[in-house]
Image 1 (cartoon, rainbow over the protein chains, first blue to last red):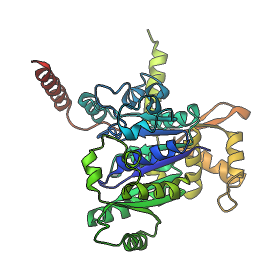
Image 2 (cartoon, chains in turn red, blue):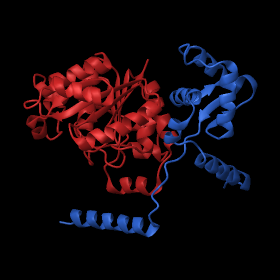
Image 3 (cartoon, rainbow over the protein chains, first blue to last red):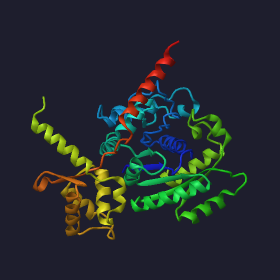
Image 4 (cartoon, one colour):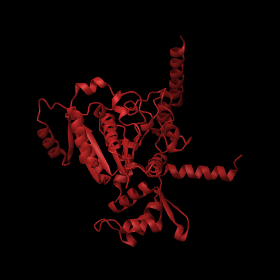
Length: 259
Length: 127
């Protein structure tokens, strides 16, 4: 059975796309058939750790939404195009596809101006699951609550909400949890990212967050200068597998995805 | 060239889509309707017979009787949130999701933005 995993955060800058890329990469490394779809059409970013930029990006989700092609035409086979970064090279030959959103300013402004067919987006996601026989499909959402985010949540089997230990994130996450429960998502997990684990005990952070939201915390990822230094140019957990951030990420993959 | 009938048909289809359900509306549906809609969103198009089988396979606490299912489908179709196709054994359903609306900003703003982006790109590419 295919499992849809949405990764969401109420606010921007939580590291959502990075966590999504790393979880998807871990699933692919474990031999799973994986798809990633960037529904953050207003501010796409997950293509970066997979080595794509405006020039190298082929067809995009935007073209599919404009009914110019089929969804499989815009799926980029990551395992066949790993490039020279050591982390990504571990994905060589793996079954992992990325559906990127366009980074061209004219295409982003076109979506903002004209809107798009939400039904077609859903049909594309379901079609991708079936055509590529995916075990997991990861949806990288736009932060906050909007049409595409709510759709992603509504069709998901698993929702991962990323938050930083910050009051603004806490309040926004509470709103998102309320909406998600209203949409009957079967499994909901929280992931705390950018935690000061050298100052505060991760076990206490986990306990506090679980008590506050009444939802399980899948992991507490430390704030890492090494991750910042990499600047999203590679898949961190593949590049630095022994780093504390990578070890915690793998625990999250184990708890949430069972891999 | 498309006929008047084709154009009217297209216009009706556009109008129907505009009246569809938004993802936020899903959260406000009664639980039994929401369960049907979630199922339909995953399957995209479902025959009535398959829908009945899927409902029967639900956990006992969530299962709908045939009457409850038929009543929920009737309401969802009347609201134009589900589209109904075909006849008799071949009756199928599909969720009618509302199109994401574009920006309400005036068209002049967007054309000004497009020209500005175009001009910036041209300047950058000029050595």
